Image 1 (tube, rainbow, N blue to C red):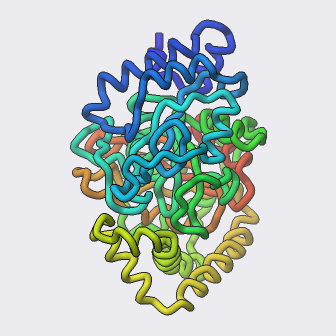
Image 2: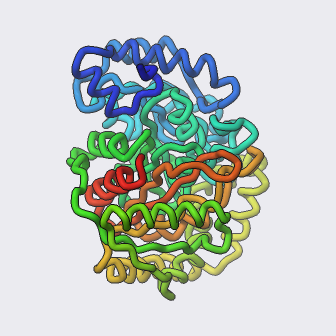
Length: 420
């Protein structure tokens, strides 16, 4: 029988509803797993078992009733520190929850703890390691959330994405990560860096988990599975130049499995407007982050990592027009993508260039994700076997803005097609 800490969120919810698993037993199983493994994984930025037990006792009825949730430490929590991965904010305790956290609690979720983020959800990593191999990165910036779901510390977790911070760690850790359409999950109470890009997303152990979690936060019914075969656009870019051989082969294998199951698969080439958005992404991301961290840079620059200061210095050296032009490039690319996808249901591409790299001093390359984040549509990373080193690989599905329910339904179809 599956250990409670290894249950998917949907399986755990069904057992709780049936009375065969109590929220208290699930929380204790997850706490025991964290006690056994977190000294190595280091997913938690804050974990207080006594608070978890009190929260379980007071969990509200709802679609997430009794389900433990990890909260990335760029989302405020009233009962735990919110330190944003920065010594500048050490010990900070907000008065209120972020909107997303409050909505999770209202739906019956139990905040299990705060999870490690890179500095301000940007570049400088925290101490988290990959649960499959502690010598490798779990990805970033949502590193603690992805690693925690993979390790069995909680079945659901919040992440955020500005370039590839949900999709890439999901792929590296062998779980499912869903970045919804921009703005679908409210950002109030989030330490926002890039106004044009930052999106709150979710992690689970499959597409159904992500649909359950995102649906509970938004009130939308995202649970329907697709039954007819989709029309799939197969795209190896924009990270094609950095794809490992086994990553490319796995995308081709997934495409072939979908075709055997009845999908129509056709090649998709990046057009000039999409390539312009790729070039604009670092300009917009870093220029907006420089604005967001104006206070920190003015009052505590020495406590910001050199790598982040260097990128923000670069952004501030650009003409003001560069940011305006970058946002315009994003808008043009979004319109172009919607037109290009008129004859397709979903786009299939890589979640990450390769398996998780060795070392935890960096979190990997977001080349496979940044464009799709800029387009504001929903994206999901699904586990898709392992690579040459035996580490997880993922594939990414993308849809135009607003097609969240459809994408999640197609994701469940793809899971079945590839045996997930």
